[in-house]
Image 1 (spheres, rainbow, N blue to C red):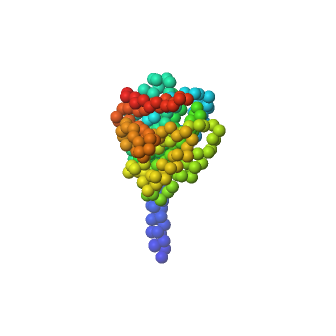
Image 2 (cartoon, helix red, strand yellow; image 1 turned 90 degrees about the vertical axis):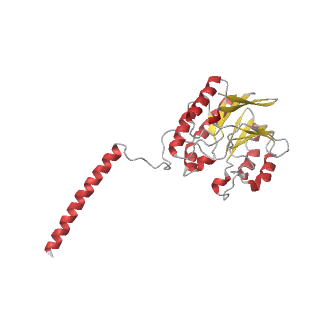
Image 3 (cartoon, helix red, strand yellow; image 1 turned 135 degrees about the horizontal axis):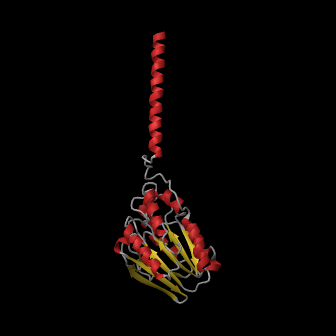
Length: 281
């Protein structure tokens, strides 16, 4: 029995020494950065809740304006060189009030891709907000978006125009969530009604597209009629620069192209109406 106990004790001592060596090596690897974090770990440094902060800045700057110039960009994905050139082109103009990114900040929704896109957009010399796109839902991308940018449905008011930004990526929820969120839309019909007279509705995926919940396309159109002074709708996703009357009733939907095709839109809003301009860079 004593021999057995001696062997057991010896084995335990060897195990402790081995464990100590393993822990020492692991600590050394961690200190030298040899362990990569998981690409979908939702752990990132830098700015968070960007949209909320930027909305406050946009509303502060534009409260008393009678004319707005808004740059509309979309689908930057991993075309970072093109996206940087896009930002540089907007900065060179010097007359843009703010920028709206219509979604697909990333290609596969990884945390690092969100950081890359955020850092490029942070080079803008004017405030910006970003919608969520279907690619931004991949993996845990929707969680990263929520931490980095904020709520998937949001709105802002500038120069008495309300910009209602909607999550329309129903496919990413397997149609099990309220997308588009009619409750949010109803709230925006009347919220801060004394501060706006006209509305622009923005989204990533347009009705009748592969991402939209096409079972509610007609209901969605009916809801749009309740927005005061609805001027138009703007969307991304299609990687095209088009405009159309998809419901056949006179409401114009403008598509904003992807960064790879090196063009975007500028919407100029005056008391008399608005103008859409295609910008090549």
